[in-house]
Structures are given as C-alpha cells and as structure tokens.
Length: 87
Image (cartoon, rainbow, N blue to C red; front, side, top):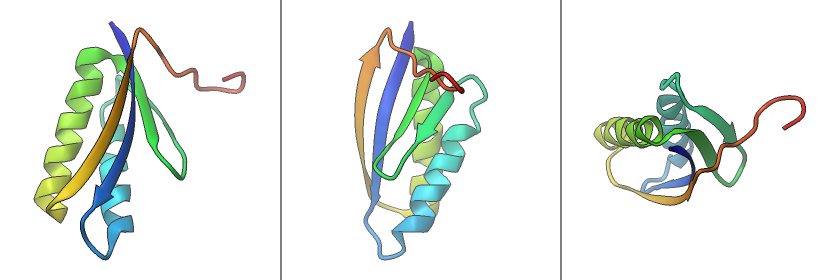
C-alpha cells in the first residue's frame, strides 16, 4: 500500500539543528521513498514497509547519536506525494 508520512522531530537539546538535519539525511538514505522537506516538517512517501523502515532506521540512528527527542507523525494511507516540476 502507498503511504505518506508527515514527520516533525524535536530534539531535546540546545543544538537541535544538527539533530534535525541528521534525522532527515538518514530518512533520505532509503532509496525507495521520496521526500519533501520544508521548515515545519518532512513528508516521505512510498510503499508502507519502506516508509516505516526509513522512519525506524532514522529514529534509531538519531537516538544513538543525539539522545532523547520527540517525533510527531501523521500517516495518510493510499497517498503519494507528487514531486517534480508539476507536483
């Protein structure tokens, strides 16, 4: 099933920018998902197993490197973010 997740991560530390950017970079390592990032959130789309796998991997890596943080997620099943000149 196609799925889109809207994610906002809130590191519980002073230097939050490095943690947020590292989280996004880790999400983008999953080649079978596409992502749109803005100043408020990151949306990733793809097959549900790929989306959940990318989130799990990014969270584990981020927790290991930066410690505690809050992740707010919204999931839209059967939805895919269109990315490109027309999207």
